Length: 78
Image (cartoon, rainbow, N blue to C red; front, side, top):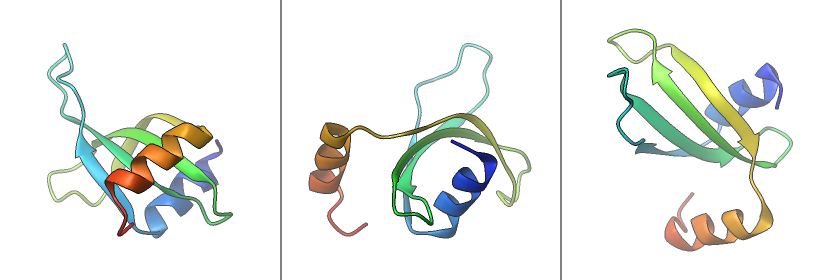
């Protein structure tokens, strides 16, 4: 994924879930959404500031068909 893909995913509705605890103590989150091109995206990120206005992407990838189906079933409103 490109930086533009990651940014566009956050411009659309996303599901944000807490990620597993990080050994370094950094609080991480998972975002599941769609890019501007409509591709399903899975992004792990951390907050860069306390106001939650800036994020630091850690990992980002396009989702596989079976993952998309599972998340659409779990979160039908997004």
